[in-house]
Image (tube, rainbow, N blue to C red):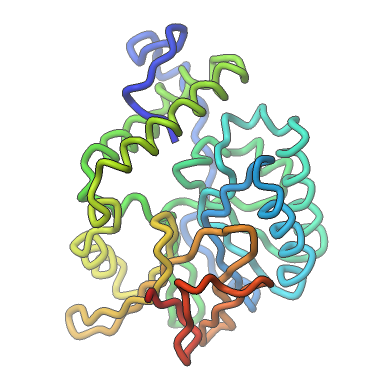
Length: 294
């Protein structure tokens, strides 16, 4: 979201802050037990008023498939960017929060995990929208079966520059410095950060920006061989692993491009669902209904 090489002349430096200046820690959940099924999973919608078709698709998703579900998990980057919870008053952000609140009031539990683009969505956002905030990582337990959820960027460990940046922007004092700026200054900062981020991506090998195989293996082992679901990479697929004699799965959620795509779980089986128009030609489904790349 923010690029460490970008600086505004009036952004305070870390040395100017003490721990008392840092925002209060956000209360998040790292274990969810027996959420209502069916459960829907989405990530990387990148909602913005500049992409009205995707925003409309999200509205239809909430008023249609989500109303028939027991729970929905949003695994980061719901927004193209989020400059702070004091920005819930903008017309676009307010409309998204109101749609989420209506969904919660109708009886569907909505769980939300921040991504790299909406990292600063916190208690204020949760209060207005009604969502339940999740840690990155969170275990979701269905009896003896566990699903492990993450945004996914923490697993891109081969991209050392990004990981250093990721560590910086999660520093509470850095966040305090950023949030101390006026809304307009924060928006301009992020707009420039996005430009530099896109430029940086063009100079990196594609495999560096994907998750690390070792990071995934170590994570699955440390959580006792769950099924992993994440987004971030925009490379939808179903991956299988044999780790220490245990069969594991990893589902990568797709980003949204003008229409809704989600992964559904009924408590035992996964299926891929898409609103019209159909999935792009670059995506297909296996007989089991899992994402595969072609």
